[in-house]
Image (cartoon, rainbow, N blue to C red; front, side):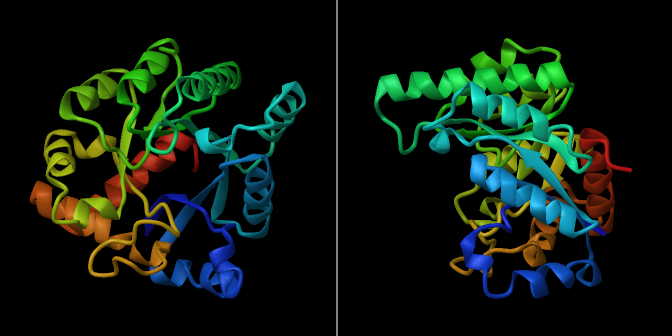
Length: 255
Protein backbone atom coordinates (compact mmCIF):
# COMPACT_ATOMS: atom_id res chain seq x y z
CA UNK A 1 0.00 0.00 0.00
CA UNK A 2 1.36 3.43 -0.98
CA UNK A 3 1.19 6.53 1.23
CA UNK A 4 0.03 9.52 -0.86
CA UNK A 5 1.51 12.36 1.19
CA UNK A 6 0.09 15.39 -0.63
CA UNK A 7 -3.22 15.88 -2.42
CA UNK A 8 -6.01 18.44 -2.71
CA UNK A 9 -9.21 16.42 -3.09
CA UNK A 10 -11.36 19.33 -1.97
CA UNK A 11 -10.52 21.06 -5.27
CA UNK A 12 -13.59 21.74 -7.41
CA UNK A 13 -12.24 19.62 -10.28
CA UNK A 14 -13.21 16.58 -8.20
CA UNK A 15 -16.78 17.74 -7.56
CA UNK A 16 -18.40 15.34 -10.04
CA UNK A 17 -16.75 12.11 -8.92
CA UNK A 18 -14.96 12.81 -5.63
CA UNK A 19 -16.86 10.22 -3.59
CA UNK A 20 -16.43 7.45 -6.12
CA UNK A 21 -12.74 8.21 -6.63
CA UNK A 22 -11.88 8.36 -2.94
CA UNK A 23 -13.90 5.28 -2.03
CA UNK A 24 -11.95 3.28 -4.61
CA UNK A 25 -8.43 4.28 -3.53
CA UNK A 26 -7.78 1.47 -1.01
CA UNK A 27 -8.54 -1.27 -3.54
CA UNK A 28 -6.07 0.44 -5.89
CA UNK A 29 -3.29 0.16 -3.32
CA UNK A 30 -3.48 3.63 -1.79
CA UNK A 31 -3.35 3.04 1.95
CA UNK A 32 -3.23 6.60 3.30
CA UNK A 33 -3.71 10.11 1.93
CA UNK A 34 -2.88 13.48 3.41
CA UNK A 35 -5.21 16.16 2.12
CA UNK A 36 -3.47 19.49 2.44
CA UNK A 37 -5.04 22.82 3.31
CA UNK A 38 -4.03 25.88 1.33
CA UNK A 39 -6.30 28.56 2.83
CA UNK A 40 -8.72 28.98 5.71
CA UNK A 41 -11.57 27.70 3.55
CA UNK A 42 -9.69 24.71 2.16
CA UNK A 43 -8.47 23.84 5.63
CA UNK A 44 -12.15 23.52 6.57
CA UNK A 45 -12.90 21.28 3.57
CA UNK A 46 -9.74 19.27 4.21
CA UNK A 47 -10.86 18.51 7.75
CA UNK A 48 -14.28 17.50 6.45
CA UNK A 49 -12.67 14.96 4.10
CA UNK A 50 -10.51 13.60 6.92
CA UNK A 51 -13.63 13.11 9.03
CA UNK A 52 -15.41 11.30 6.19
CA UNK A 53 -12.68 8.77 5.31
CA UNK A 54 -10.65 6.66 7.73
CA UNK A 55 -7.55 6.70 5.52
CA UNK A 56 -7.50 10.46 4.84
CA UNK A 57 -5.58 12.76 7.19
CA UNK A 58 -5.40 16.54 7.27
CA UNK A 59 -2.72 19.19 7.09
CA UNK A 60 -3.93 22.62 8.20
CA UNK A 61 -2.33 25.82 7.00
CA UNK A 62 -2.26 28.70 4.56
CA UNK A 63 -0.37 28.65 1.26
CA UNK A 64 1.69 31.78 0.48
CA UNK A 65 -0.65 32.68 -2.39
CA UNK A 66 -3.69 32.73 -0.07
CA UNK A 67 -2.53 34.88 2.84
CA UNK A 68 -4.76 37.91 2.25
CA UNK A 69 -7.14 38.41 5.14
CA UNK A 70 -5.11 36.52 7.72
CA UNK A 71 -5.38 38.10 11.16
CA UNK A 72 -5.17 37.16 14.83
CA UNK A 73 -8.61 35.58 14.68
CA UNK A 74 -7.72 33.30 11.78
CA UNK A 75 -4.39 32.36 13.36
CA UNK A 76 -6.28 31.40 16.52
CA UNK A 77 -8.71 29.36 14.46
CA UNK A 78 -5.85 27.53 12.74
CA UNK A 79 -4.32 26.73 16.11
CA UNK A 80 -7.64 25.26 17.27
CA UNK A 81 -7.78 22.98 14.22
CA UNK A 82 -4.47 21.39 15.13
CA UNK A 83 -6.29 19.71 18.02
CA UNK A 84 -8.46 17.78 15.57
CA UNK A 85 -7.63 14.06 15.91
CA UNK A 86 -7.00 13.74 12.15
CA UNK A 87 -4.65 16.75 11.90
CA UNK A 88 -1.09 15.53 11.35
CA UNK A 89 0.81 18.60 10.06
CA UNK A 90 0.89 22.34 9.44
CA UNK A 91 0.72 22.89 5.73
CA UNK A 92 1.07 23.79 3.19
CA UNK A 93 3.09 26.77 4.27
CA UNK A 94 6.08 28.48 2.72
CA UNK A 95 6.99 30.93 -0.03
CA UNK A 96 6.02 31.27 -3.69
CA UNK A 97 7.87 33.89 -5.72
CA UNK A 98 6.85 32.54 -9.12
CA UNK A 99 3.71 34.65 -9.25
CA UNK A 100 4.67 37.31 -6.71
CA UNK A 101 7.39 39.73 -7.89
CA UNK A 102 6.74 42.70 -5.58
CA UNK A 103 9.13 42.86 -2.64
CA UNK A 104 6.59 44.08 -0.10
CA UNK A 105 4.29 41.18 -0.91
CA UNK A 106 7.18 38.72 -0.68
CA UNK A 107 8.04 40.14 2.73
CA UNK A 108 4.44 39.54 3.80
CA UNK A 109 4.75 35.91 2.70
CA UNK A 110 7.86 35.58 4.84
CA UNK A 111 6.05 36.91 7.91
CA UNK A 112 3.17 34.46 7.45
CA UNK A 113 5.52 31.53 6.84
CA UNK A 114 7.45 32.32 10.02
CA UNK A 115 4.24 32.73 12.01
CA UNK A 116 3.04 29.28 10.97
CA UNK A 117 6.46 27.79 11.69
CA UNK A 118 6.14 29.25 15.20
CA UNK A 119 2.76 27.54 15.55
CA UNK A 120 4.27 24.25 14.42
CA UNK A 121 7.07 24.59 16.96
CA UNK A 122 4.65 25.42 19.75
CA UNK A 123 2.37 22.52 18.88
CA UNK A 124 5.17 20.07 18.02
CA UNK A 125 3.72 19.38 14.57
CA UNK A 126 5.68 18.61 11.40
CA UNK A 127 5.38 21.06 8.52
CA UNK A 128 4.69 20.66 4.81
CA UNK A 129 6.70 23.36 3.05
CA UNK A 130 5.91 24.89 -0.33
CA UNK A 131 9.00 26.45 -1.91
CA UNK A 132 8.69 27.84 -5.41
CA UNK A 133 11.50 30.02 -6.73
CA UNK A 134 12.28 31.07 -3.15
CA UNK A 135 14.99 28.65 -2.03
CA UNK A 136 17.25 31.12 -0.19
CA UNK A 137 14.47 32.78 1.79
CA UNK A 138 12.75 29.46 2.57
CA UNK A 139 16.00 28.12 3.97
CA UNK A 140 16.65 31.28 5.98
CA UNK A 141 13.30 30.92 7.72
CA UNK A 142 13.70 27.16 8.12
CA UNK A 143 17.02 27.73 9.90
CA UNK A 144 15.27 29.89 12.52
CA UNK A 145 13.34 26.86 13.75
CA UNK A 146 15.87 24.06 14.31
CA UNK A 147 13.40 22.11 16.45
CA UNK A 148 10.79 21.96 13.65
CA UNK A 149 10.98 19.18 11.07
CA UNK A 150 8.82 18.29 8.12
CA UNK A 151 8.90 17.76 4.39
CA UNK A 152 9.75 20.05 1.49
CA UNK A 153 7.05 18.94 -0.89
CA UNK A 154 7.47 18.86 -4.67
CA UNK A 155 11.15 19.40 -4.02
CA UNK A 156 12.81 21.61 -6.62
CA UNK A 157 15.96 22.73 -4.86
CA UNK A 158 19.58 21.88 -5.59
CA UNK A 159 21.63 19.11 -4.05
CA UNK A 160 23.42 21.37 -1.55
CA UNK A 161 20.09 22.56 -0.16
CA UNK A 162 18.89 18.96 0.05
CA UNK A 163 21.95 18.02 2.10
CA UNK A 164 21.28 20.79 4.60
CA UNK A 165 17.61 19.83 4.89
CA UNK A 166 18.58 16.23 5.59
CA UNK A 167 20.94 17.41 8.33
CA UNK A 168 18.05 19.35 9.84
CA UNK A 169 15.84 16.26 9.90
CA UNK A 170 13.63 17.07 6.92
CA UNK A 171 12.25 14.72 4.31
CA UNK A 172 11.94 15.43 0.58
CA UNK A 173 8.88 14.55 -1.48
CA UNK A 174 8.54 14.33 -5.24
CA UNK A 175 5.68 14.64 -7.70
CA UNK A 176 5.15 13.68 -11.34
CA UNK A 177 7.74 16.26 -12.34
CA UNK A 178 10.42 13.60 -11.83
CA UNK A 179 8.98 11.66 -14.78
CA UNK A 180 9.43 14.61 -17.16
CA UNK A 181 12.35 14.70 -19.60
CA UNK A 182 13.85 17.86 -18.07
CA UNK A 183 13.96 16.51 -14.49
CA UNK A 184 17.77 16.23 -14.36
CA UNK A 185 18.21 18.19 -11.11
CA UNK A 186 15.54 16.21 -9.26
CA UNK A 187 17.04 12.93 -10.44
CA UNK A 188 20.44 14.00 -9.11
CA UNK A 189 18.87 14.74 -5.72
CA UNK A 190 16.95 11.45 -5.59
CA UNK A 191 20.08 9.53 -6.51
CA UNK A 192 21.96 10.96 -3.50
CA UNK A 193 19.23 11.23 -0.84
CA UNK A 194 18.78 8.04 1.23
CA UNK A 195 15.52 6.25 0.47
CA UNK A 196 14.71 6.54 4.20
CA UNK A 197 14.24 10.30 3.71
CA UNK A 198 12.10 10.28 0.57
CA UNK A 199 8.32 10.36 0.15
CA UNK A 200 5.99 10.26 -2.84
CA UNK A 201 3.05 12.49 -3.67
CA UNK A 202 0.89 13.60 -6.58
CA UNK A 203 -0.10 17.14 -5.51
CA UNK A 204 -3.43 16.22 -7.13
CA UNK A 205 -5.03 17.58 -9.18
CA UNK A 206 -1.82 19.17 -10.51
CA UNK A 207 1.27 17.86 -12.32
CA UNK A 208 0.19 14.43 -13.51
CA UNK A 209 3.19 12.21 -14.31
CA UNK A 210 4.10 10.78 -17.67
CA UNK A 211 2.40 9.15 -19.53
CA UNK A 212 -0.65 10.95 -18.08
CA UNK A 213 0.73 14.49 -18.33
CA UNK A 214 -1.98 17.02 -19.12
CA UNK A 215 -4.75 15.03 -17.43
CA UNK A 216 -6.33 15.68 -14.05
CA UNK A 217 -3.97 14.13 -11.54
CA UNK A 218 -5.03 11.79 -8.73
CA UNK A 219 -3.54 9.30 -6.30
CA UNK A 220 -4.19 6.58 -8.87
CA UNK A 221 -0.97 7.79 -10.51
CA UNK A 222 1.23 7.96 -7.40
CA UNK A 223 2.74 4.59 -8.29
CA UNK A 224 4.59 6.32 -11.14
CA UNK A 225 6.70 8.29 -8.65
CA UNK A 226 7.57 5.06 -6.83
CA UNK A 227 8.50 3.45 -10.13
CA UNK A 228 10.72 6.37 -11.12
CA UNK A 229 12.52 6.44 -7.77
CA UNK A 230 13.04 2.67 -8.01
CA UNK A 231 14.52 3.13 -11.49
CA UNK A 232 16.87 5.90 -10.32
CA UNK A 233 18.04 3.99 -7.26
CA UNK A 234 18.15 0.55 -8.86
CA UNK A 235 15.91 -1.10 -6.30
CA UNK A 236 12.60 -3.00 -6.41
CA UNK A 237 9.54 -0.76 -6.64
CA UNK A 238 7.93 -2.75 -3.83
CA UNK A 239 10.74 -1.67 -1.52
CA UNK A 240 10.28 1.98 -2.53
CA UNK A 241 6.56 1.80 -1.82
CA UNK A 242 7.13 0.15 1.55
CA UNK A 243 9.93 2.43 2.73
CA UNK A 244 8.34 5.69 1.58
CA UNK A 245 5.16 4.63 3.36
CA UNK A 246 7.12 3.95 6.54
CA UNK A 247 8.75 7.38 6.16
CA UNK A 248 5.40 9.12 5.92
CA UNK A 249 3.98 7.25 8.88
CA UNK A 250 7.04 8.13 10.96
CA UNK A 251 7.06 11.84 10.08
CA UNK A 252 3.33 12.37 10.53
CA UNK A 253 2.92 10.07 13.53
CA UNK A 254 0.41 7.76 11.85
CA UNK A 255 0.19 4.21 13.14
